[in-house]
Length: 623
Image (cartoon, rainbow, N blue to C red):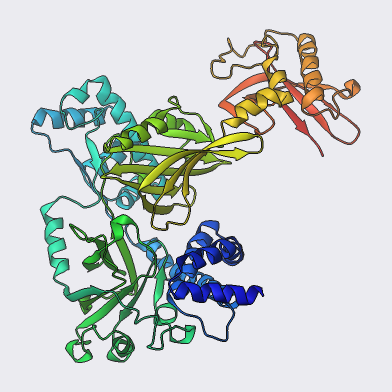
């Protein structure tokens, strides 16, 4: 019965009943995601492949003798395996490339400033930087060398060089602000006069782009089913050119194929009559690049065109971007270009140039160091979350951003989220009714770009309590919303009402236990309390640990040992049930380490600061 119902719903959809497909989507979406995730081992990619799977079955009719369930799982499996194979091929091809080639040049230039003394002021400020920052800033920002070239000169790794540039910019900003440099030029915000420009503004580079464009002999775009449908009205995998003959580039969600001979080209020409005739292409001098799309596109990716094709040492670079005055009803899904063979390399990389926003007060996402921390984010003015809790100075920052968008004002916010040590950073720009988002997962470097038309604030139930969810709606895929952030404000309410730790922590005696970590500055590290006094203080710690943290060994006084150790303060006595271990400010203190343990080797260590007599840390050990 289920098999017949699924097939009926699928056929109803093909006959124009959109609601029928929504029923199938809701039924199978989570199951397909789970299936794909077990293959590709990447939840984000599983989501993408799931969407591609549904798009594919919407466009391509299954065979009459197949069940819908078999069909959708076969498509999902094929898409997953295709992704794995493509990633494997890409890694093999790119491994050598990344070892030897220069990173794409991103030149930083000084803001165009009329007064020569202003330029001199900036250079003088660079001279005030620490030597390690000065050289990095100078080479990249003034000499306009690439990050890789600078890394080689300084004898640093590429990542360390990026870190030096990022931190050097922050130090330079402070110097300029102290000098009152923010008043020298109205264009410059908060004294930052160094801006990152992804396309160099030099005449040489402009000339280069012009020359590169001459390599495109002919190009066009069209809407066609020819790559998927061989004329029978449906597609099976053996005849699907896109799935079986083209290469998938996941970051732009496009297929491509570079064709260098007439035999391979004829396969495509037979499917798409609008392509140029074989006789019109001289494959001795040219090659053909074909690009195909079967996904919903972002609003700034509708009505795209190939704007540039050029080669570096190893890669044919294809640049695509939205046309000016784009037709937002455009349904192009295939592009081709006939290109001079001098630009043919072993690798092909498609880049989509999105709308460029300038946010002078923030370092570009791609240039942030890998150790960019919560404190860095707060200092830079990000809306900052840790484990879904707001830790920003301004808790209303996101609400204020939403109010600006409701007025139709152009505005920007950067959101930093550290959840269980996975850091996501998202830039949200709002302009002309569209939210443009660019996100990076900091530890992997994985990037995402999306666009939406709505942002809403909702309350979602979490047991007896409510979370706050900010969710994007009306993006490229209209099915459901995409969370921007989830804020678990209910934790504060929960711990006050139900968490036994809350009352205990609130009632800690701050003459015995360190509770104000932010302002803790001991007099010195000289011993001012006796070992006997330290043992008396530690007894309070063992009693507190026994009540609510760890009890094993706390009563084994005969096993007690005492020694002096250097220790960093931690939250052993002040954390709540949902928190992990945290250390504070990384400054080591001399402490009496007073330890007790039972016969099984399980126990607790209490750390008493030798100069203040405060218990600043604790540790439970053993099974």
